[in-house]
Amino acid sequence: MFDALYCYKDNSVKFFSVFEFKNLSDAHIEKYRYHLTCPACGGKAYFRRDSIDGKQACFGSRYHKVDCAEFAPSPRKTEEQKQVAEVETLILEVDELLIDFSAPIVRESSKKSAPPSEVQAPKESVKKESKVSVNKQTLKKLLVSLLRGSSLASSDLWIYTSEKHKWRAKNLFVNVNDAKPTDNGAPRMYWGTIATIDKTLNWLNPAEERSVAIPIGRYRDLFLSYFKVQEQCDVEGAGFIMFAKCIESKDKKRKFLQLWGDDLQYFHLSKAQDDSV
Image 1 (cartoon, rainbow, N blue to C red):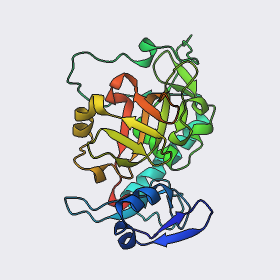
Image 2: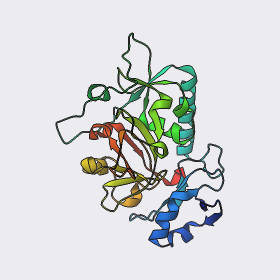
Image 3: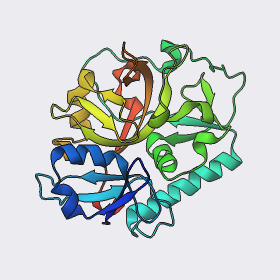
Image 4: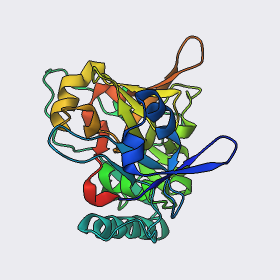
């Protein structure tokens, strides 16, 4: 655990202890929580409230630099460092990577969403002309590497979202802070962290950009069940990656990430744990 650093718009700063922060008014917590950073490495930090099952309120960060003094040694840290190293090696050694969307999710409806290649052909779609050896990676590992600052999001590595469709990594992976509708409505792999979920558990609010929201109402029950979300603090500080379409509100003031086909195989949520701070 650490005292968090709050950065004001005029670049002045203030340190908060967890005790001080959790005793602020709800309005101030909601205002400040989007500007918290780790005092050691400057990585974006989160605040998680006390939970019903007894977990204490805490600060944490999914953006710690690997060598950050506040990134405490833990089995999770060791595993994340290993995953980041593996992805960096792949960027250097392979030409193509296939995303493994095989999350074991059973939909309540018999109507299944078609894979991206059958629903809509993205602008960068390319049909494979010959068989090649393609490395397969899970959303979980890709998310860890992105959060920990790997070069994946800026690389020229070819990423397959299906057997027929591939994208340059730099054109596919988009941090939620940079989310915007595409010219042809094609999806992207959006990633970031969650600040809060509304009280009805229907909207996820990313920490990086307050004008972006993730509506989960159409698959809410399955989402809550699969990711074991029972209260608001369960998702505070969680990392996420999702294959989604970005749409704007009519007044252009809000943007929404609409999960592709409302199918949870295209969504991965990495809940914050005590040993991850």
